[in-house]
Every structure is written in structure tokens, then in C-alpha cells.
Image 1 (cartoon, rainbow, N blue to C red):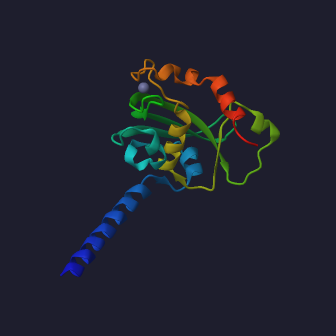
Image 2: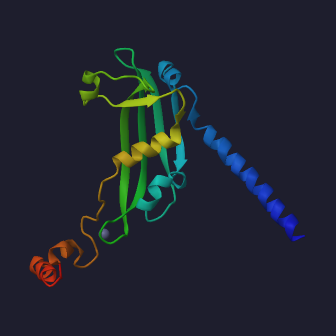
Length: 187
Ligand SMILES: [Zn+2]
């Protein structure tokens, strides 16, 4: 009887996993170059729970972000993607670990290049262009997550942090105390 229950649960779990795999497949663009060439648009929302690389930076994992992905051809006929992402993330304050509300405002312009293509020195040094090397398929959720990570502040903090004394914690280490500690150590 118990065994039956386990099998049923397992079977159910497999079905759920299958469903979520299918739904994430919908967020894939099979040929990003064609997507850009044809000037297509993909937009929608993605749950923050799906961005695993963000989880450690957040105080809670709820809500979603809205994205708008536009393909188009640039002036030189290059294949371009414009990605806009908006939403609010509860980042963990680096001082007190409470939430700092961060409004995402991603607006990235990327030029698609075939994976493994050699970029010229001029292209590499051109600060005005960002390249996205791709074979052909684009995982939209992963791309959105990459661009969110690039947009986050390195050390999020409350402007006026509630943790008492946290602001000057770094000044409290007395350099002389550290030196005298070294002196006493045997070689
Ligand atoms: Zn804080």
C-alpha cells in the first residue's frame, strides 16, 4: 500500500516536471537570428522564483518581472535584440540584511553574432556595441536573468540603514591593536 502511494506521488511529480519543462520551452526562441530579421516581438512575465542565480541576493522570492524583447535589423544589416525588463526586487541590504526595494529598469541593446565568430579589434574596442554570441537558440528566461544580474547594484544598501552603528563598523578596528597582536606571535 505504501509502495503504491510512493509510485503515485512519483508519477505525479514527473507529470508536473514535464509540464514545467514544456512551459519553459515556450520561452525559447529557436532561431534568434530569424527573430531579429523578421522584427518579431516577445513579451510577457517571468516568475522571480525561476531566477535561481538571484535567490541569494533577495530577502524573499516572490513576484515576477515583465519583459519585452524586440528583434530588429540595425543600420548595417546586423541582427539586433532590444530587451526591456521591469519589476521590483527585494534586495538584501549589505548592512542589515533587510529588504531594499530595487526598481529594475533594464534596457539592453545587443547585437547577435554567430557563436565562435571572430570579432575584429575595432568591434571589440567599440564601447557602444554589446555582442551576444549565439548558435541560434535563445533561452529567454536565462537571457533575462543575465541582464537583471548585470543591472543590480554591487552592494545594495539602505540610504539610511536602520542598523545602529553599522555605518561606521569599518572604523572600529584599531590598527595598533592589530599590530600588537602580531608582535606577540612566535615566528
Ligand atoms: Zn539596511
